[in-house]
Image (tube, rainbow, N blue to C red; front, side, top):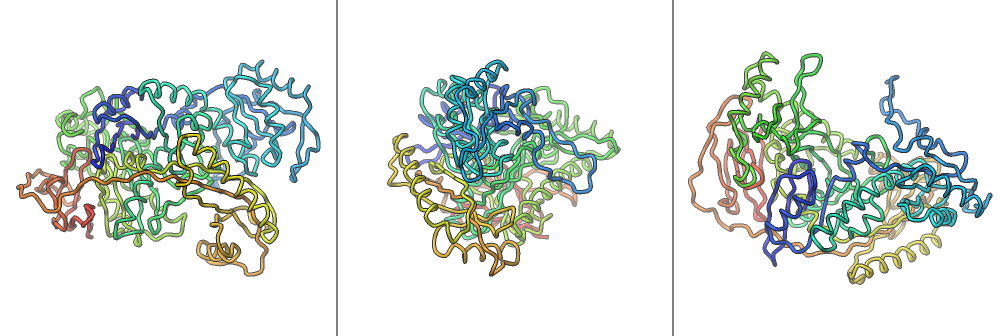
Length: 640
């Protein structure tokens, strides 16, 4: 299941049959979770949620105390001197999650080789523990200098603190760069009490253990996430990328850009050759997270995004959302601000009901709300609808260009894989804006992220920074990889899994000496040659003489899970489509509405057309066409 801001999506396997449902999200997520599980008769689950992300964005995490090496108490405030906008002299940064008076310095010091220059004494450990409790801490961060090389000092402080939730930096992120390691560990501790309560409440509600989606893809046990909640902070969008990777294995097109537009946000990620991409420099609310996460760009642009007028009189859409309650005006639950969903309904793109007809939409209310907004803008209702749609699409196009440009990719080389409740409806216009020729709509588009969570492998991962010349790194690489393999075997077997089924991949982060950033290279063959080849592909050049350094050793172990697919009709069902008026840029057009369950393989439909299913609506524009490929994908050629 995928718990979103507006809806909670469910996909389940009943033998080889795939079943799905969608329910409105609730303030207490466990209510929606239990309701959906009962509807599809589930007796186990894998879970994706934004509960940790929201706690950080809304600043409602735990009162956290930060313990570091004496002299580095201001680390979180100083951070890095990076400027997001070079010529902006009015840069403002969010205050750190830990107040300065809650930052403590431990009198100890370890050097860059892991040697204790100033050993941590027992009296000092007791002093730190006393200070922590005196500050009424709800959670504690221990992040000592070079603790990833010598973790004993962090462990000593941990033992002295007692029963409080504690996050140790060598355990959360055993890598160098002290600010990024501190920030990642602080985020882990900041949400730990909240996540632990959430996981315990959910386990009590469903009366069994369950899996949770990780930010880097794959799932792990809820007990492991309670121990290391940073793993789920960016897990929400990862499910859709995981599902796209599964789909690409049997699809003709391999270069994909995912476009997941739900009720609250739109998420984008590139899959060159069908392979997900990762990054270790993700940011949430300007706080760096240095663990590997699926490379996703998220913006506040969804079906529930609110339309508003800025101080200059221009129409804006998002990032604020109407959520599930009160929701769009058309829900009839008290919403009084126009949303993208209201514009889509009045413009004919959206039918009169959601959730397979269980949620009836009130077009009259939505039209009245759009009329009021149109009066403020001195526009007609039609112009206001088209204007709102153009604004939200331009915002999404900007984000998608960023995803591709950051990796040196050309959108014309990719197909746009659109899903989420609103993605298939807006994909054609986004594709035209970017010069993408083809849009693909998968099976179960409204719950595709939930399908990705359900089919994701169980995953464990480890890393350790060891900076040294590559030519002298072989022994330490072998030792670290073997230690990681043993840990993976132990952790997987502890959860009742057969570690022999695990697919293990070791990688190393390499760089030319003197560089500030690294490239991850699989551990096989000639590492130096592979690094130079990848460096040349990414940046257009690679020195043949500059020495190469090993920076970080990583290992990922994945245990695959079964991947059934929905059964698809082999031939079209002869049903005459209904039709409705739909507003396009060139005006209103009479548009046939086809039920997806009636479409067979190789069927071709000329636009304009609508394809309707329980949890999503697909638009084929005038001048475009749709074909159903042999795997059941809807392949839309968007035209000019």
